[in-house]
Image 1: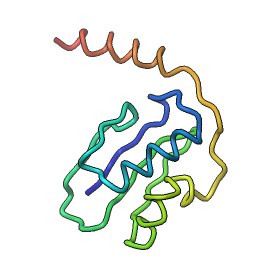
Image 2: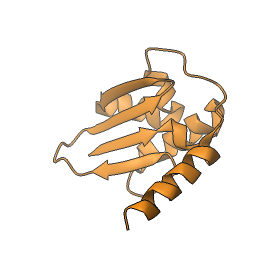
Image 3: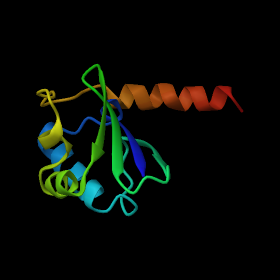
Length: 105
């Protein structure tokens, strides 16, 4: 399973994001979050997370051990950089997305 996450769609601070992502990683088919852009059944038994955050695009394929860690600590425990603690601007991005969807109808 592959999950595409865009942290730019949520203003939650990093501590909340860690808890939220931990719950999602533990039960990826049971949680719907504003930052989840897409969940793809790619036939891979491992969970792959593709994330857009802090001007970066990262892709992590989680082994069972990494998934166990991330299901407690959140995605940030596996990141090779220090993500931003606070985020802003999600409301404006959602308004822009809303305008885009009406233009295509």
